[in-house]
Image (cartoon, rainbow, N blue to C red; front, side, top):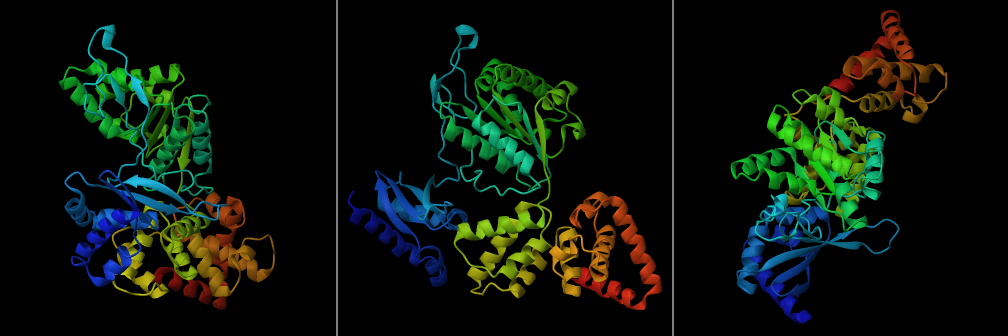
Length: 477
């Protein structure tokens, strides 16, 4: 079709959409969209950011598809071009995503082996069976890339190992690669990033991402259909197998047994296995020892809660990708307030953007405080070492870098000792971790600092006043 044709189609859709949303929402979410092409019955529109795309998919996709079907018929489909910033390149690059929530990566066609050399073609649990020549959908989320994964001290080992695996799957000593950590720290993102990078570097490799829960369900279905061998042969044909949340196999003896044989086959044939879990192998209960011992063959890398620098970097990256402007003090406030995991951090930012957009309010520190009070009401809000240091340094008007330095000036030493004291009182961190955050001091220095603060509180009325004031600021924050 001509350029005029697809623009006319989109303009006709906009005329209908305009009558079904508020003027403000139309201006915010539909005015910036551009129609860029059409192929048969697939209309491609361009949106300014990943956040914009996700908002449309979550809030307006039903309305958009209904209007599109009126213009193009019942088989009408939508595709997005998303503008993304590419560091070092002046013009943003475009990533293309179909409107379905599923990325467009696919594996090459493969001839599946036959069962015992004479049986029917193996059934792929992810497609409608019946064809011998099949495409295996890798089930990867395209938006989870290494570029989008912010590196910090909390995840450097896991990210570096994951990247090495993606460059040479099955050819490193990191096989299996076992990634573990609490919820919302980026395990699923990193596992998908490895798969996406493998597909980019080795398009001939068959990659598959699957949750342990889905693996279990497929195995049960295979048993009921008397297709156990088909199930095993299918998984043994994968070049890079990514099992997410492997701890869900705990207590499921038959599933563990079948996974043991699949794992052995893949490992012996130098196929890459990537596993994620909320616990380290040594802490997993209900898993067969022979499996746990194999999980330890390669590398176990943990993801920890992001430190302040990493949290700030994550927020800045997301803000830049979404093409919005937020005062730095607001970004800093969010980074200090949400310390547990990345998912909550990004969720807080999205909630703030939504409140600002839908209520037509400017993003200010007061709006952020009101939003965060509601956002963290149902979660345990633990004061972080970083936040304690900020409050104390602001109180004494001393830069955090100076407090962490090796200077022995009396006022700086007292500031550092107070930071150690309150960190021990108000956080669950070890003495060694507190010392590391306070200028790489050892645990003995932290103990000495706490003892000194207690002694001064008993003998120095002015110093006692410092403690009372700081405690109020920390508990009211």
